Amino acid sequence: MKSLTRDMTTGNAVKHILLFSLPALIGNIFQQVYNLADSIIVGKIVGANALAAVGASGSITFFFFALCNGIGSGGGIVASQYYGAHDEKNVKNCIVNTGLIMLLVPLIFGTVGFISAPYLLRLLGTPELILADATMYIRYMCIGLLFVSLYNYISSMLRAFGDSVSPLIFLIVSTIINILLDLLFVYKFRMGIRGAAIATLVAQFISVIGSGIYAVTMNYYFKLKKEDFSLSSEMINKILKLGIPMSLQFALIAISTMALQRVVNAYGTAVVAAFTATSRIEQIVHQPYQTLCASLATFCGQNYGANQKDRVLDGHRKGMIMMAIVSVVMFVLMQIAGEALTSLFVSDPEVIRLGAMGLKITSFFYITLGTIYVVRGTLTGVGDAFFALFNGIIEVLGRFIVPITLTGLLGMGVKGIWLSTGLVWAVSGITAWMRYYSRLHEKKDSSRVIDKISRIRHKKLLSH
Image (cartoon, rainbow, N blue to C red; front, side, top):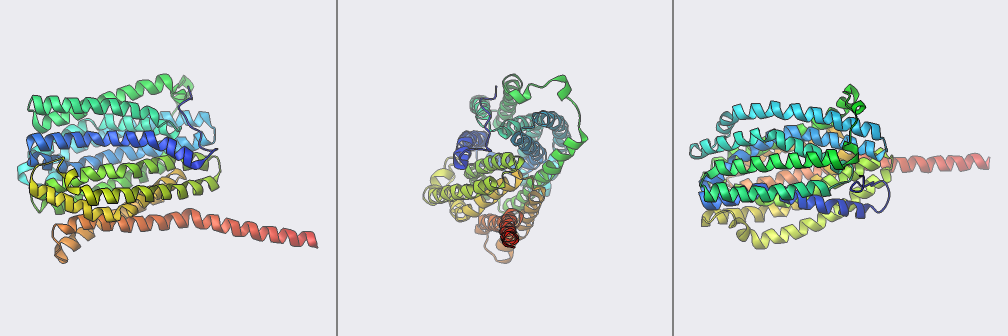
């Protein structure tokens, strides 16, 4: 029953990270295929305005997803620390208490999102031409918020035990179903954006049902007994102490994305469509970094729980090397194939030109984007709740100030939209590295100095 779990407190760090990362990477890419399938099919079959409507809804739906999924991720980190400490009782108690939270939170935020969708879109200055479709799409996504949150909760728990294979299987199945239903509803039945939204909703439902059945029947730690179903205020506090800052971080990033979307909307539907296309492409770029983040969070969480801080630092160093290699490859790809990638979404030459330009600009900053994820995974694993919130605040400030400065005050126009994205990554990446150094590296250095002083004093005492 424990065969798919992975104890990362012993053995080669790189091997653990890579073996965990590969299925997680494939899973993350398949998860993004949800968005890509919607965007490509809607953009090619329905048109650029429909693609713009889906894109205009993205930052708002991400905001509500973020509020829920951060808490589930926080519960996963707590579980990984107990797993590393071989504390089976608290692992199971963490599963139960996190599950209760993840049943209630998405119902609350899903209702709020459903009601407030048109008001939020108007607040962002969404063009009237796409307002109705964008509102409808957000409301369907809010209905599916419970399914997404529960799936991510189950996946976070399985990954906490080193199992990145099982979540992958259910993502692949649900993604294939999503694409087939997209083609059926949008292409065959000509249901437009509504068809794409319903297809995604059905696929999300299937993924949570499948992963839930698997977890309770096949995973050792989900085989809960009656005595495991106990509410624990102490456990809930631990989950929320880590989960709420993560939720706020993701929510702040979503708010910052909304701020940038407002700037984008002011340039009309062609720029909105191009920005949507580049955003979808860069969601794929994010996946290797997100995978490293998840791998390091599990690796560092287990080793921190086992009180092996040297392995935490070693994992971070190896993660930075892997991230740098990925960044170089992605940079070359975007510089060479920017137009070809953008043309997957639309046929409009102007949209393709703008999208290719945007990808070439932001690719210069991929290494700082990767730094954010590597540091986030490391610090999340050791339970640094402050960093998540701090990093989110930095990004919000950057998204509000930099785009307005570049596009307006400095008169850079459309180019300033994508350049502002890269500059915000750069600032966030630098501050993330500074937080890592102050939180872990200096403590490690100071402990070495103290140990050295202690040994010298010990030798002097012996000599006397």
